Length: 121
Image (cartoon, rainbow, N blue to C red; front, side):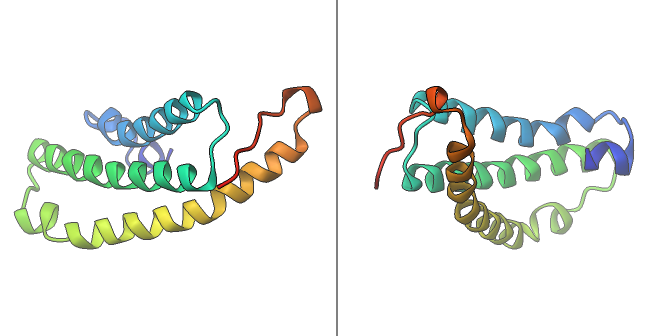
């Protein structure tokens, strides 16, 4: 939504939306593979991996976008990569801390017949 609201529909809009979509698909696939009942450790793992993947994909999209629109500079695209990965790791840590709590609350609020089994560390 931020991409659309900030820049409107451009030639690279789908590229900018793609990393977040891939994150959702990856986490959803992993959760389904585990019967939607993951341990806190599994949740932390998939959230961290997906955050780092999104950072990598966003860097690739920034490269393509900058080449297409003529503002490419190695320093701009790759110079702050370490900072972007650090931000990605911090985001992953924050999401990893919050996600298990949210899942616990959601499980508690689900009707009794629909609750998945909860695994223990």
